[in-house]
Image 1 (cartoon, rainbow, N blue to C red):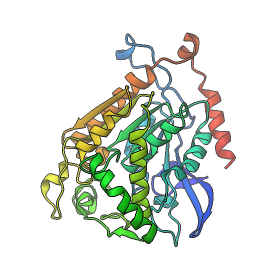
Image 2 (image 1 turned 90 degrees about the horizontal axis):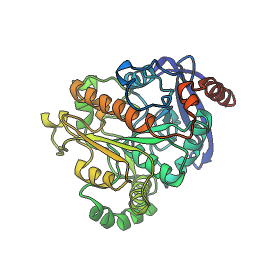
Image 3 (image 1 turned 135 degrees about the vertical axis):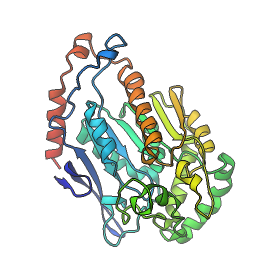
Image 4 (image 1 turned 30 degrees about the vertical axis):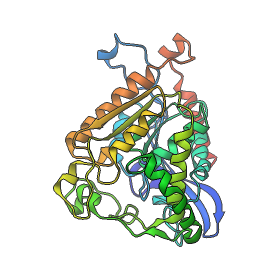
Length: 357
């Protein structure tokens, strides 16, 4: 356990050993916001006192997208201030978990991420399933996990999840076979080169944006895209599309519009320049009966890395959903437990699990 060099004081990282592949050892990195007492309960908001009874704020586990890492300290601090025990997970071969000599983002099946997700949930505590707050490809991975492991997570908050290919299922169906064949031939070699720098130009401080993040871990054009990774993503989208509905609450936040092109335009600063939001929204609607979709005017691909107005709207929507759809959801706890939640046991459990690492 050590202070996270990227998020700084108040955040600790915990390495999860995952065995090895032919490139060497595999690790994932669990990040924890040190709130002093995991699972602490915030004061009751008097404005909500007359509303429905709510349970204690659940833990939240952040999951990043492709060619990305957990980086949004401001969002994590906000969630922590509202009483959530906040965690983040850098998957194998991403961000803090990318080791020398490894092919960044390489994975041949999204189910392989089960190992680090399961280990993270054990450390957080099996008795308090978290909300997964997952971005882009992480949203696809989180939805697949929730589908195959019912009861392990409280809810899903998906930030522009890559649930479907551009233009929808037809594109995915047409691409699946040729991409699979190319992946068998190219394996971890790139199926196409790094992309445009449009997204970084709209977000990163060095290019006129307002956010600071490590450009080595989240390159402006993304890492070269391994063929096997694209094949695994398309396969994951296919499996999710044919799976049954999710019974848990799901929030999907995304931009109001997409803007693409080889040349950068100012419109890209207030749009999703990575994914087709129409295909994304259509796939999100099929996730289950408890899906809330919100298109945010002026938002970017990562809605929380948008301009201040769109970011504030995204945070407000997340807060409202957590309070009304997650914390207000029926539980098996007695009224006395709801009024006097025993968070000390959860805090001790999380600390003991961390100490076991």
